[in-house]
Length: 431
Ligand code: C2G
View 1 (cartoon, rainbow, N blue to C red):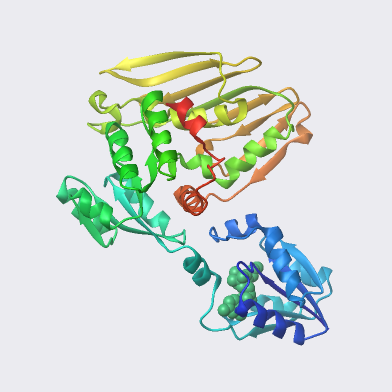
View 2: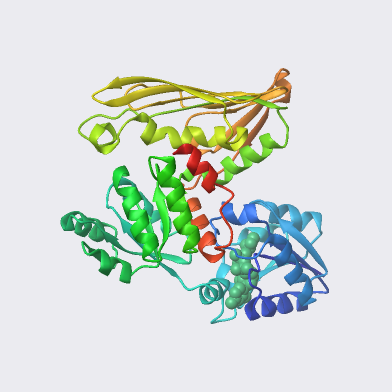
C-alpha cells in the first residue's frame, strides 16, 4: 500500500512527527511532498523560516519517508497520486473536507492533528511578534494595515500623528490598539516603525526612530538627497537596525523572477530599459503641491528607476531630464540615462497619461511587461521568431504591500543581512 502526504514541515515538530508516523503506518511505503518556497508564497504562506533544502533534510531525518518529492503547484496532488500509483492520501485533520475531491483517485484519510503545537507558534516563540507603529495616517498607511495581516510575526499596534483627530479616525477605522500625538508614548509601545508621513518629514522621523532604537520601513521617496540617504543608512548601521525603503515592486515575487530570468541571458545582452508610470491626479493634494515636494519625479521615479538600476546597475554615465513644469512641479518628466554599453529611459507623470509598460531590449530578444508592470503579474519574452514567445503568469496578491512587509520582518530577524532586493546603493541612486 502506497501512502502520500504533503506539508511545509517548517521547524519540524512533534505534530509533524506524529502525522508522518501515522501516515506511514497506514501502508508500507510513504511518499512525502514538501512544498516549494514559490508554492508556499502563492498560497499565502509568506512566513516560512527554513529553506526547502533544510525542510527536505528534516523530513528525511525522521526516517518515515521512503521517498520525498517537491510540491510546486496547485493541482499537483491529482497528478502525483496517479504518477506514483498511490492508494491512500493522508493529511492532518485541520484540512478536514478540503481534500475530499481526491477520493476520485484514491482513499482519503484525515489524521487527527496534534493539539497545542504548530510551526506558527514555534516561529513566534523563536522571534517574538514585532509591535509595529505607523507614523502618518494618510492613504498609503490605510492600505498598509490590512496587508500587514497577511504577514505573521508582526502586528500593527498603533499610529502617531501630531494631528490627534487624524490619528484617532485612522486608529478607529483600522481597529488599532492605540493612537497618539505623543512621540514618546508611541516609541514606548513599538519595536519597529512604518513611516508614511509627507515626504519632507521623512528624514527627521527616520533619524528620530533610529535614535530610539526602532527598525524603520519608510515610504518612498525615503529622502530627497544623497547626503541624507547616506546619513540615514550610516546611522542604521551604527545602531544595528534595519532601514528599508518601501518600494513594493522591489519585493514582489514576479518582479524578482523577471529580473532573474533576464539576468540569466534569455534575451541576450541588455541594451535598453524603458519604463513608464503615470497617474493622473487633480485637486489640492500633496502630490501636486510644490511646497510639499510634490511632482512626478518625487512621486513616481522610484518605480521606474527600479528595473533600470536592477538590470543596468548604479554606474550610469549621464542622465538628462526633460520636465514639463506648472505651478512649481513637474507634471510630466521624460529622462534618458546613458550607461557605458546601454541606455535607459523613463516617463513619469501626474498630469500626462502614457501606456504604463516596461520594455527591456536585448541582443537576442526583449521582455515586455504590460501595464501596470509595477504590480507585476504577467510578462512575455519575445523574439524575432514570434513562435518562440514565452508567457509567464503570476499572482500579485491584494495591494502587494505584504511582500515588502514580509521582507522587513525577515530583515529584522537577520539584521546582519541587507536586503538584496533593494539595498542601500539602490536607495542612494534613487535619492
Ligand atoms: N500537523 C499535525 N499537527 C500539528 C501541526 C501539523 O498533524 N500540530 C500536520 C498538518 O495537518 C499536515 C502536516 O502536519 O498534515 C504538515 O503541516 P504543515 O507543515 O503546516 O503543512 P500544511 O500547510 O498543512 O500543508 O500541500 C500542502 C498541504 O496541503 C498541507
